[in-house]
Length: 199
Image 1 (tube, helix red, strand yellow):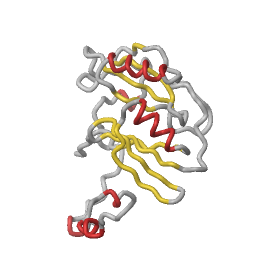
Image 2 (tube, rainbow, N blue to C red):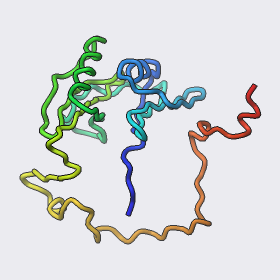
Image 3 (tube, rainbow, N blue to C red):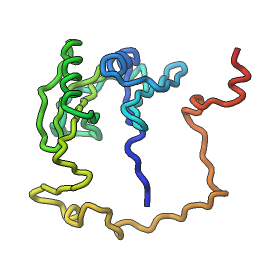
Image 4 (cartoon, helix red, strand yellow):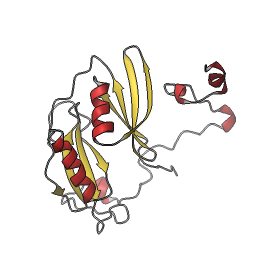
């Protein structure tokens, strides 16, 4: 059984890291916890919650997304609609709304979705954002609910994973044969040789 622990990071794109830092860190209060960079490339990480990060790649030739309302269907290539950040309570939603409007940015009214209350806005890259506060009486994690009036046959099979729809997993190699290749981010690890090179 795979032990999922949530979302490690969401990876977004900006052409203006300064504006992104000013919005996510300075206006919304997400701590900047790591940064990588070289000529023509940056990668910065903002902490949403313990073990949950929002990552931005800075690609100078990128263009901001076309502004698109949250949850409104579109035609053509698409793979993302909006990101929703969970907050503790409605008080947090009102504080975020106050900060956004104080900065001259658009913020929706608070919306009751039954299981969450939500506030909508956009970041400087036109990324649609939702801020969601849980409704205590409705916990979909403890009590999943299917309210589709015309559920797909696959959905009628239940909420838990159903075996038999995929071929068996490939064999997992023994520990002695496993290798993890180095990639971006190894610069964030402190190594003894780094301490020796420091002035």
